[in-house]
Length: 559
Image 1 (spheres, rainbow, N blue to C red):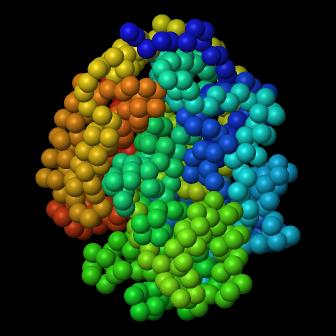
Image 2: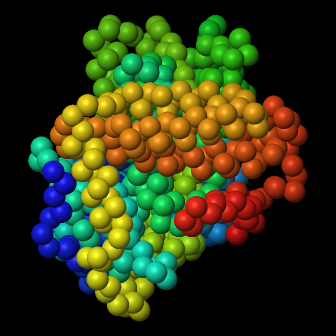
Image 3: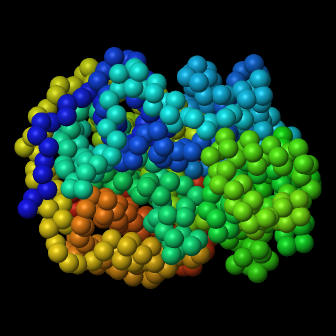
């Protein structure tokens, strides 16, 4: 029996794939601009994405706190976790210059940006520099933004994932295909839209996790599986920097983000600091060691000098209490506090081993311009799915706002186009029906674990080479063919997992191609057969785009 297509096309001006921070900010802004907005969210916008449970740092420039020397601010921000070489300088300036607008807006929406009663900046900065990471209480950020977007008139469709962007013969966006997974049987939903924003977040679960048997023990959102990267790539959008995948860090086997919330020192087994940045714990300064050397935990283990610890034994009782019962709550990682209490671990006496978590794509993805538009007309992107903008929470919020402002103007210039007979709809219905109709075959976990092993063994962060990458790409393509022929699902939940795995395969393939094409070593990309760094590629990003069966790889200058 074919998978049902819902009667009636959902028509809107602006369709948003993903209800994370960037998606909700875009929905709020676009609805304020008076255009019709629909948000399609795989889970529930009140608790989804990397900011699902909260955040406690918001990178921003507030003139009354930081002064009028914006050039100094840009230089110093570039030395933090929200700067660095894998971001266009123009985009850094753009999102940083507009952060104060978002801070003020969020405060008006009931998100406590000043829990101490004043603008308070802590952590994530080099010693001696100004601090730009506003310490706020973001535990309610998702419910607050959801309520604000709906109040402005945005329509939110939870339990609805977008699977493909629809483009016309000219290559312009005209809609999308979605799937409602709220009931036991999946139902296809067809959208007609003048503009689409991809805000589907990062790509996790592409590599084995720190505890492979527990696939969802992840420092990010395990539901963020590269859906947006894959949709954009299939639609012909240019992607950037996929070969420069990275990871996060935190308690070694209890994968949680928020390493900047800890008030301690990154230390060796004897409690000695491994970097010169701090010599005593400081709530104000934090510990920037893992921002400067994010791979330190993996590197030290491989070199035999690890393990590496978060050492809070010299942290004051007041700062420990604040960290465990305020900071962790704001960041949404208070499960760490619960775990410590359940296991009678006293941080005043015991160090906590930290580790590098599974590799993923966060701020490696869709290449956008200053209007947040991709190379496909009418297709926008914001948040962790973007490949040339960082800024984490702040960058996501600002670029979501920019995308909405740009789309509100763009939709005035194009006409609606009927999507009912788009050939991709029938193609997807046939595929989805085959997955649901099979009585036996391969389970999604089999394909997922095989993919993770291929990515880790042949395109991991330890070492790469043409022979390894070529072999891995061959295995990946064989796996992909088998997956299309054999994967099956018994209900909507399993069906969603199947689609996630297929999307991850569509992300893994361009990663292999880009790693093959980058014939140099430039951390975190290490080639055994090209051990030098090609200086001609300094200040350049590698890009990839696909049109039909034709794949184009290039290096472009940063702008």
